[in-house]
Each structure stands twice: as structure tokens, then as C-alpha cells.
Length: 360
Image 1 (spheres, helix red, strand yellow):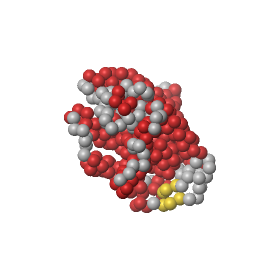
Image 2 (spheres, rainbow, N blue to C red; image 1 turned 180 degrees about the vertical axis):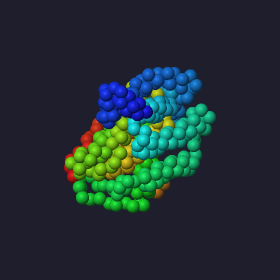
Image 3 (cartoon, helix red, strand yellow; image 1 turned 90 degrees about the horizontal axis):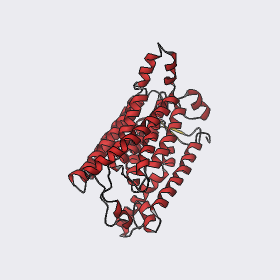
Image 4 (cartoon, helix red, strand yellow; image 1 turned 60 degrees about the horizontal axis):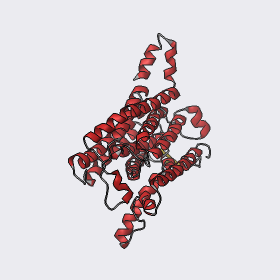
């Protein structure tokens, strides 16, 4: 919105031309989202505590988590509001990718909100029934996949690119739709599974969003994309503003979510963040790179799949508890040690993902 206002004002005052620069608007989006999170956060935490919207802790989990009972949750609404506000203020609202990413993020946030509301306010311990939750996730994910396919402007928009190999590309055609669907829904649920310790999910989300912003900027620039050997996606550069908003909102939330957490994000935040990362990766045609950079999310998800599969097939568990971060806690690792080590792993994986820009 402010970009368009600045464009109008630049006809009268040339200094407003500076707001047309994508990099400046990305920085301003990050700062705006950060400021919203820091300013609104304390009030939201007090409001959640006042209305007793608090975390419920499993009795069969790590005993150190019992002290977390009652900690305000649904704080992901703060992340969602900061991302949406910063994006609407600084992004080019005529860009199709901006609206698709925003709609997906909000849609998954609403699904998470309803799940949290049923569990924490209504008192339904099951929350949103799994099949209904998956149905609405599928509806939103499939809708986004179809929108991206229908509005594709070049073959590059629907081609799968394999990192580290410059000439290994797979034209997907209609297969683009199911792939996009699985990336969005899978990423959303993977982040949700990771959100079990203070700051464990938000910091990797921030790091991956920042890296995807680099890919978005390069993919949306003809010169950079040609030089780096990555696909040129017209309009993808504007997604950098959303990535920056996620970065700023995430850091602001981490201020309150760091150990010991004053607030948890809940499904409203985790599902929205995961879906946002998934659809952004699709837009910039880096689904495989997302799999690499989001390795912690992948590890958490695989640990749950292996645990459930092993118990059903053999009647035995592989891990002491799943997702795997609880396994390390039950082995005696202190919660901050698990969190920081998973952050370090994410930094390494994100750097590896960024290395694919040159190693092709």
C-alpha cells in the first residue's frame, strides 16, 4: 500500500522514488513486522493470560514440561498479524505471488486458530478432528496449487529444478499441482510437529524464510538468475518482502518465546508459517532446497512416522518419545541444549541450501 502511495508522491517529490527499491521495502517490512511483534506482544500475552488461554501439557511427556502448564498460547496470532500488516504496507499489491502466499498463510492460520480454539477455549482436548483438519488443509493447499498452475506465465513456473545440477530439470505439467499440494501441506504439518520446545520451531522458520528471500530476489531478477543458473520467475522478487516480514515477525515473537517461554505460538502460528515456507519455495522453484534447509522439520516428521510405523508393525518404539526432540530430552539433554543444537543444525543446512546458488 505504501509503495503505491510513494509512487504517487514521487510525481511531486522525487525523493519518494527510493521506496520503489525492492531491497529497501524488504528491510522496512522486516522492521515493521518486528516492531509490531515487540509492541503488541506484551499486551497479547496479558490478554491471553487473563482469559486463561494456556498450554496443556501431556502427563506422559518429559516431567520438565509440567511447569509449562498454563503458559499463554495462540501467540501465533501475533506472528500472523505482523506478517500480514507488514506485507500489505510494503509489498506490490498488484503482484499475484504476494496474494497467493498471503492467502495460503492466512488460510492455514485460520485452520490452526480453530484447532487451538477448540482445545484451549472450548475445552475439547481433541481439538479439530484430524480428518476435518486435513480436509481444510488439503482444500487450501490444492487451491493454491491450482492458482499457481493456472496463472503460470512460462514453462519455468511449473518445472522442477534439481539443485547442484544445472541441466537436470523435470517439466511437470499437471504433476505440478499434486507436488505443490504436498509441499505446502507437508511443510505446514512439519513445522507444527517441530513446535514442541521454546523457540525450537520459530528460529528455523526465520532462518529458512531469510534464505528463501535470497532465492526470491535472485529468481525475480533476469541478470542474477541467468548468472546463477536458476530459473527466472517473473514477479517472484516481490516475495522477498513477505520473507522479510516473516523474518521480522519471527524474531519479534522469539523475544517472548525464547526459553523460558512467555508465550507459545500454537497451531495458528505453526501451520501458517509452515504453509508460507512451502508455497514460497514453490514460487521460487526450490522445493528440493526447502527439503534441505528445513532438514530439522523433516527430521522431526520422519521420527514421528518411524515411531508410529514401528509401534503398529512390531509393537516396539524406536525412540523414547516422538517427535525426536522429546527423545533427546528423555535421554537427559537440557531443553536449551536441544533447542540450540537444532538451531545450529538449521544454520548449517541453510548455508548448504544457499550454496546451491553457485554449485550448479
